[in-house]
Structure formats: structure tokens, C-alpha cells
Length: 424
Ligand SMILES: C[S@@+](CC[C@H](N)C(=O)[O-])C[C@H]1O[C@@H](n2cnc3c(N)ncnc32)[C@H](O)[C@@H]1O
Image 1: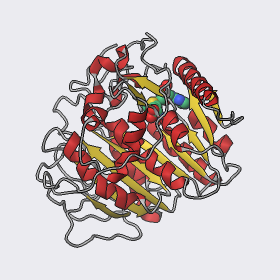
Image 2 (image 1 turned 60 degrees about the horizontal axis):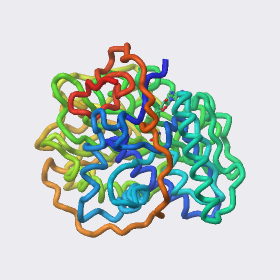
Image 3 (image 1 turned 180 degrees about the vertical axis):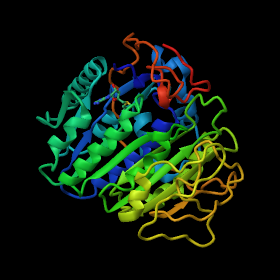
């Protein structure tokens, strides 16, 4: 049963993190004069109307793009992302928000290829409509049609990924962004990536995930570290201390396999500002962690399962691996040493632990200074297309897995609403 509809969450803090990172990955891919294939295993509808019934339900964009809209002193790295969103809203009023396929379309080049998968029939139809309008608009502007540049498939992205690898040009950027409504999604992500890396080890694979109390979520990043990629980067953004009732999504992460070397310093410069602007309380924070594949005994230990205390306890990662490094003078934690709910407002450094992480850094809580520098617009301004959420489509019945309050369709794990209890 497919109940998740991303329109309910469009533009929330998790989308900001995801799409900001996605923009950076495209910009990196664009540096080389060789085309690449962008594969979106879970595409959603492509464009969302923030004033539509679905997005308005809990107005989750108020946790994300909302506070950024009129922000000043924007870090340079955020500027292309913000310019893209603003380009969809030429009136200056925040009405539309891009989904990952739209981000990809705007940031990729004529010679690049987009392969988009979406399982929900309605969202797939809206996605296809949106791209038809994009193409029409481009034709009006005199741009030649690009043949099979964009292919949209109504199907299972987990299954389809392997069919496309290796890509013809031997360059690929893959986004894996499932709803995580069912805990199987965590396993499917790992399995799909394992197979994808076997077929095409050189691809850049980006995975969005919710940082939640549930076991699958807490173990997820550690398990991704064991995938056969040379390097990984894990960034999390927490906007508030999770409530005791567990409702709402306070924190999410992007895990990137084979990350560009430019990504970490760029995130390090930008995340303090995002925490400052999106943070709701002293629990707001970020972590950035990088490392090499965790192998051998350490990986087996991690596979043994949780060693995860709950509550505020920090856990020592069972992992050990290559390249452990702690930078002197930085307040650092290794991802996994902290429980998503165990956010320490003071940001004190946890005990050292053995891990495959090379390093992870987070600012001392609340101590970030406003970053210097004014962002500059970089992305092109293009007309918005028909968004999801303006179609009157409704989601189906509430989720039944009981794993995460938040309501089917409106959210499950992705809900950034205050209560997270949104209903359709
Ligand atoms: C979080 S949304 C995607 C959001 C989109 N990536 C973005 O950033 O705008 C997840 C989407 O995956 C779809 N979906 C769920 N399971 C799927 C599967 N196995 N294959 C493809 N799409 C799936 C859902 O219908 C939903 O639209």
C-alpha cells in the first residue's frame, strides 16, 4: 500500500538538506565535460504547491524553506539552491517548491540523462505532466527537444537501479530517497546500493534518511558505512530537540557514497548557518562525518546489531576501521555515538570510540557565529510547472506499521510538523 505523498512535507528542513546537497552534487558533476546519468529511484511528483491543500496541511515548509526565504547573509554554497527555488517563484511569493527531479532538470546539462522512478500512480502521473510542461516551456523558449534525455518510469526504483548501471558514459549520480514508512525500506536501500556498487563502483550515491528513535534508523548510517564504496560522507541536520512523544521529524541525514572531495568543506561552512536559521531550540545541531569503507571484524561487529542504549546515553560505535582521525581543537563526535534523541544542548564532545569514521565534527551548541559572506545567485530562473498538491488528490488511510507516529500520507517518518500527527 502506498500512502506516502511527499506534497505534505514539501520544503521542510529535511528537503532543504537533501536538495541543497543534491544541488552541490550536480554542480560537482557538471565540472567535468562528460555527460552523466542522474537516477532518482524515488522521484515523487517533481514540483509542489506550497499553498496547495497537502502542503498547507501542516505547513512543514515553515521548518525549512520558509525561514530561508527572506534570510540574509546567505552562505555562498546555499545560493544556487535558493536561486533555483526563487526562480520557480518569479512573483517573489513563495508558492512552489522543487522536488528532486526538478532540481536535477535545472542543474543538469542538455547532454546529461535523467532516469526517474516513481511507484505511486498519481505522483508518477503528475511527474510526467510536470516534465511535459517543462519541455513545452523549453520549446517555447526555442530550446530543442532533447530526445530521451528524461525518462520517467512508473515502477520500483529499488529494482530498477541495477538495470541502469553502469551508465553509458560511466558517470552517474544516484539519489535514493524512499519514504521509510515501512522498515523494509532501510534494508532495501542497503541491498540496492550493494548491488549498484557491485555494478558501478564509481558512481556517486546519495541517500536521504530520517534520524529517528527506531532501531532501523539508528543503525542505518553505520550499516551504510559497510557498503563497498571507497569513501563516504554522512551529514545530519537537527532542527530541534525531539519531543518526548516522538512525534515529528527533528533530524535527518544525507549519506553519500563516493562523495566529491569538495563536499565536506562546503558543508562545514554552510551547516552552522543552517542550524542558526532553522534551529528551534538548543537541540539544533549538525554533524558531518567522513570515512572509508568499514570492513572485516568491525563490519561483522556492526552487523551483529544494536549496541544502542536508548534515552540520552551516548553509544560507543562498535566499528573500527581505517583512517580514524580526530582533529585537535575541534568539538567532535562520531556519528552513532549519539542517540538522535540524546541531543546535548551544550554540544559537549562524547567519549572517544572506535569507529570506521575518519572524522565527524559539529559545532559547540549554540556557539556558531553567523557566517560571513553574501550568497550570489547562480541557478537559472525558469517558470514553475504544475505542482503536486494542487490537484486535489488525497492520501489514503493512516499508516499501520505503528513504527512512527506522523500519519500516513502526511508523513510517517518524514513529518516535520510540530505534532507530527497530521492527518489527511
Ligand atoms: C520522499 S518521496 C520522494 C521525494 C523526492 N525524491 C524529492 O526529493 O522531491 C518518496 C517517493 O517514493 C515513492 N515510492 C515509494 N516506494 C517506491 C519504490 N519502491 N520505487 C519507486 N518509488 C517509490 C513514493 O510514492 C514517494 O513519492
